[in-house]
Image 1 (cartoon, rainbow, N blue to C red):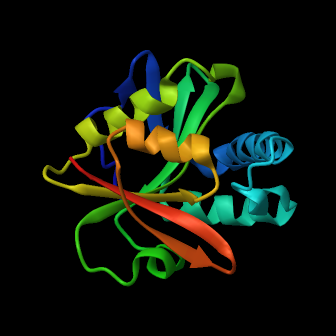
Image 2 (tube, helix red, strand yellow; image 1 turned 90 degrees about the vertical axis):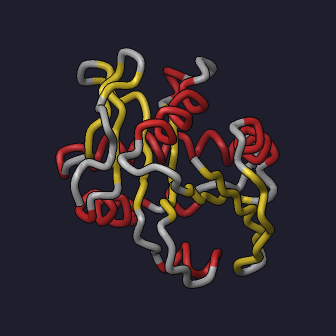
Length: 176
């Protein structure tokens, strides 16, 4: 899959596809954030606390779905974006045959928190995808009130809650 954005700049940052050399730093950032969330009692990304989850991060990089946002060489943020529905997407949304993009693991490095980078990055993604009149779908743990409110403030429409193995997940989508 080729680079799906019109430009590769976001504010003073560069966005690029993650490579195998980026796997460890992307995983470590996600792991650190998962630990912070767990300490706050938020059950988002707990699966990342199993060190074997690095294999899932690596697989997404190999598939070409993982992007990194860097400031020079420092990792600022990461996200996964793909038009291919994963098994997870199918479990949540049902099997779809449309032109939606699926956004996962949007994360901002703790060093860059509280600078509105996540919100600005969402807006940048929507404006710079190489298609028009598209749709972005995403999900988050239903009990993560901060993240649910974040997506609503970003203009994503709540569609429904889906229960997976006793955990509710909120589904959101936005037309761009």
